[in-house]
Each structure stands twice: as C-alpha cells, then as structure tokens.
Length: 444
Ligand code: SAH
Image (cartoon, rainbow, N blue to C red; front, side, top):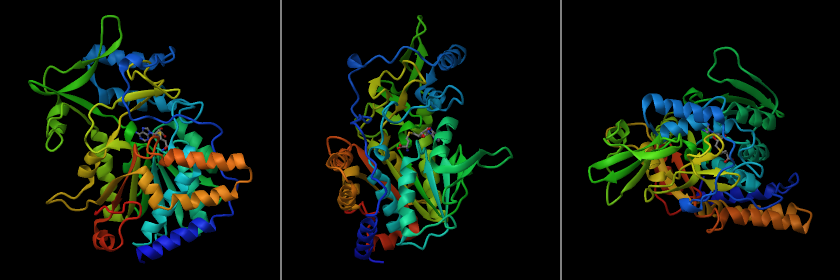
C-alpha cells in the first residue's frame, strides 16, 4: 500500500470515529514531569513521612556492604514488593505525583493505535496480534488504543493483551479498568495474573518482558524507560568515576564519588559514550537490555515497537530527579514516596537496538522525533477537530483543545517528549519507498 493510500486510510479511520462516546477531558491543568533539572537550593522538601521500611532497607544495605550505586538505589525504591514506589495507590494523576500524555488527552492513545495499524499494513494483516505494553500505568493508553482497534474491526479472536508490570498495585488498577473478570495465576505460568475484557479479549500480566510469548506483536513503552535504573558517572582527573549513595554520621543519605573505577565504569563506559568533552554521563544497563530485547523480538517474530518518553540524544548527563505531588524533590529524601526518573538517552537505545557489523537479528531504528512532529504527522489535528465537533458544550470543546495543545506545545510537552520506533530489518526497502509515518525526513 502506498503511503498516500495509508494516509488517506488514516484520515478515513479518524473521521469514521466521529460517533464517539463522550470525549474524555481533564477538569483542571496538571503539571507533567519537566525536563529541566532544578537548582537544588530551590527544591521543595518532600512531605516528611517516609516509607520507614524502605529507608531502613537501604541504610542497612549501605552499612553492611558500603555505598550503593544510583542504579541499585532506584531498583530498590521502584521494585521492592511491599514498600516500592509503584506500590503506592495514587502515583499518576491529580492526586498522584505526575501526569502523563495518555491521561491528558484520549487523542494520544488513539493516534498511537492508528500509527501501529497504519504501519502494520505495510507488512501483513497482523492477525492474530499481541499488544504488549511495558509499564502500563492506569492502562489509559491501552483503553484508548483498543477503542480504535474495535472501530477497525479487531475482535477478541484476533487480539491478546500482554502487560509487563512490576507492581501488584498497578496490576490491580489496570485489571479493574480493563477487565470484567481477572484472577491471580497460582500455578507455574510465565504470567502471574490474567483476565478478560468486556469484549472477551484475554489479558495477561508478567513481571518481565522475557516471559511474554514471542509472537507478532505491537510493543508500546510510554514513560517506561525513564523509570529504569541508571548508573551515574563523572569524569575526574583520574578518569571516569561512579556516583554512589552513602550515609553520613547523622544517618542522612548523600552522594559520594567512587575512589576507584567501579565494575559499572569498566563494563558500561566505552566509545562513543565517553567521547568529546563530556564530564557527566548516565547509563541505564537495564534500558539497553530491554531495547535490545525489543529489537530482537520485532526482527525475529515480526511487529513494531514504539518508545515514547522525555529524553535527549546524548547531550545531557545529569538528569536524575524525583517528583512528589507534581513538585520536584530531592531523590534521596523519603525514598519510596517520590517518583525517581532520568531522561532517556535515545542515542544509547539506538546503539543497543541497531544491527552492528557481525550481528544478526536487530531492528531498523527510526527517530527520535519530537512528540509535536509525531502527533502532527499522524494527523492529530484532524482527530482533534472530530473530538471538538463531538463535544456538546463550548467549555468542553475548549478543554479538549487545550489538552491537545499541552501535548504539542513546544514549551510544554511538544519538544521534550520524543518518539522512537523499531521495525523488522526486512522492512528496509519498503520503508525507503514508504517512509515511516510520523518520522518523515528520517531514513531508517
Ligand atoms: N505508561 C504509563 C505509566 C508510566 S509510569 C503512562 O504513560 O501513563 C511507569 C509504569 O511502569 C508504572 O506502571 C510502573 O508500575 C511500571 N514499572 C516501573 N518499573 C517497572 C519495571 N522494572 N518493570 C515493569 N514495570 C515497571
């Protein structure tokens, strides 16, 4: 199918979706995670009550084994099964700590659904199809994507949903929003929870991407990579050293630079990452591993992967920060009570996912492009108009419009958030002829 046909088809899908259930919109303005690292002197102090067990777990580990890496700290804070940050009930949204694009406008998930469908048309019919989401949050993105797929004619016979989610609290939030019935899986299965949607689509939950069946899939990771643990490094006169977390005499957590090369310095710092006059570096070994797995899966078993997050292309080195109640706070204060995050270095993901000489089965990588450009090239404005026309009250029309503007405004989320996609390497010649939607002017 030609790109023009694809584009015409997208327009038709968008316009055919006029008969909408009431459009969803926010009732007030939220703040989203900002990319700017704040001046530490102006940081707000987080609310005093901490997760007592988590801070004790961290301090005990340091007392017994010495300073820990930032990656170890993030790992404990995010994934501790009882005290971890994502075990909190309200993380995303007004009552939580931050807001994300799918929560701001339903257009976001709908456009992603259309993008996956349009790009898949260049490959095959894509039935049966697995939708795999990493870190689905409140499952809002998925609900919006499913609405589009339903309009296009996908049924429970064609689709299954596979969610990679570390937190049992988030799993229940997702299950309650997506499913009419769901249950934990007791027996030894790769997934630990399962359910069905109202239309009978099977939903499975896993704690690791490795456990998801290797079939033709759409992989989506929105604001997932930014929560994965990072190592932080600084260049000294003696060479690269790792920033570690220690405790002072008063029992307060603080940063300390390693005296010698740590294992992570030896393993992770290599060209081209340490090139130029960089003095600070953040590397997420976990992110590189996940990006590589996604690339291999897409290449070997077919499908597409779409990564959307705030990030840069290697020009930043000090972006680790924390959010609590929509405010930036000190990441070492009250661990488990604030969201720990670092900007995604898309240049590192590209290296991890791309085919290197002598290696087979890695993906074609496109992007990153700015969120604004991606959404606009996917005809976001056309869909916006459909939604505005479907809203009954003027004030609702205004809310829908301002929510979309928040996503595309260069001063808000339009430029800070970026999109990257992985295609099977066999798509090279097709993509040269019919360039990837949303990534125009970019060669794979
Ligand atoms: N994608 C959602 C939520 C982003 S928040 C949105 O954009 O609204 C990050 C999500 O990733 C949460 O659901 C969190 O519980 C999950 N998560 C964090 N660390 C994870 C890990 N190591 N493995 C799987 N899921 C993880």
